[in-house]
Length: 167
Image (tube, rainbow, N blue to C red; front, top):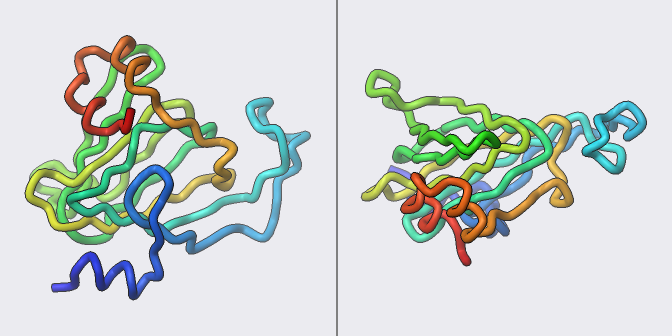
């Protein structure tokens, strides 16, 4: 079986600012002019982007939100739990993995403006995922979650919020 260290090397992954390891694998060469995009965007955007994303037991994807919808893809490894916190104050936990019969998902959509964070299920060694964003991802569209504010709005998800923030 392949290891996380081998995947990091073979896929040329580097540490991601939100946690885990990543490499951008696709960025469209074409752009959408900001004049035809919704007001939440302040400049031209590429049509789309895609990344590899690796989680290990000592990493997690910190709670964050984007101005754009995102589609996660599970490729291989151990199951991942994703916390999604909705703008209306509700939330849900979704499991990604390849055990479809037991309720895990191969793909999960995250709507724009939704807080999201993820980590390996306890005991997992790694998970290799992908993320596709359209219009394309830019760090200017990324907002890091603040633990205290999230706990005020979503108190019933306290344990996961604490686990998925670095405050």
